[in-house]
Structures are given as structure tokens and as C-alpha cells.
Image (tube, rainbow over all chains, first blue to last red; front, side, top):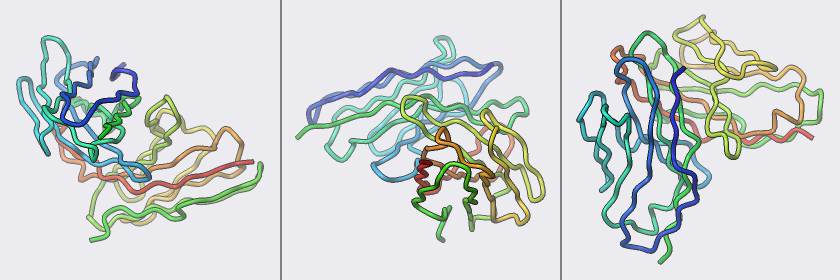
Amino acid sequence: GDSVTQMEGPVTLSEEAFLTINCTYTATGYPSLFWYVQYPGEGLQLLLKATKADDKGSNKGFEATYRKETTSFHLEKGSVQVSDSAVYFCALRATSGTYKYIFGTGTRLKVLA
Amino acid sequence: NAGVTQTPKFRVLKTGQSMTLLCAQDMNHEYMYWYRQDPGMGLRLIHYSVGEGTTAKGEVPDGYNVSRLKKQNFLLGLESAAPSQTSVYFCASSYGTSGGTDTQYFGPGTRLTVL
């Protein structure tokens, strides 16, 4: 079945450091891919998405490129801030008639001043 | 717009008690979902609905029931709570567009503890 695997956390970085959070997926067909962010005490919010191969999603300085050849959707940011501290979830939604999303286990990011 | 709201925000139950969690959305979304979030396990789908009057089982449906009598509301029931149901519960909704481009919108969560 479909699945999403993301790197284990927590990830601890200093402010202005470069961030990469790895995400790989297994799915039939061509799923849409998402990154959601969860700030402390809140629900998940969509951060960015990509719907087809080679698409790049971007928002708030974060980027992720849909790589079908490596079945990956890694999240990157060039310079993190303390306010980026949160849990990040990679997710997919298949296009073959299912209405369900598959989420990764989440990666906690802590940015130190 | 309030978006997706959940009631209550916190609840403590004793084993065997029952309760209902309410999710409401004001975005005229067709699809609604209930997830539970447990440490190290991410989000797991409990039940979902693709329209008013419809429900379907997700990944972990046992011990839960749902109803979607009105389009804007999705109720999650626990008939006889167990300590294993201690979790944070999130409701989400989406338009249900085809082609996999649908985006889910999440509520703030309900933290449930079963003693």
C-alpha cells in the first residue's frame, strides 16, 4: 500500500542554518505531495504542495521538489528562524480514486537563537 | 470564517464512559476526516466522510463511531472509552476535488485522556 517515510527527529539547528527534512514515498500512479506544519498546541497547516513530477512547491522560504525518479519530496529552507520551530509532516494523496491521505510520522524541528 | 472548529478542546474520561467529539466547518467542504495523533506514529485516519449522510472506515476505526447528518458537522463517538484511546484527535475537511490536488484544513485538536 501507499506509504510515506520521513527522517526521524528531533532536528536541532542554530538560527540561519540550512534545513533539509527528507521525505520519500511509495505509491502507485502519480500522487500529490504535501508538507504540513504543526506549531505547538495547534492543528496542522498546509505549508506547500506539488501535484506532478518536477513541480516545486514553495512558501515562507521553504521549498520542496517532486522527484518521481527518486520518489522523494525533501523539504528545504536556506536560513531557518526560531519561529520555524514546529513539527513538519510529509503527506501524499493518491489520484486513483481514494479519498485518503497518508501522513508521515512527523519531524520535530527546534531552532536555537 | 471560523474554518474548522472542534469541541471540546480537552476532556478527561474514566474507562467505560462515553463521549462525542464535534467537528464543524464553515467552508462548504464535502469531505471530512477524523484522525488521531500519537507520539511517534504521526496521524492515523479513524473515519472519513465524502458527503452528507456518508461515512467510511479509515485505518484505525475500532472503538469509534461517526455520523455526518449535516454537511457542516462530523461527529466522532466513543461508546466505551479505553485507556488506549488517550490521544489528540484532529478533524479535517476538504473540498474533495479530483486529481489529487485537494488540500485538507485542520481543526485545533481535542486532547482526550482516558483514565
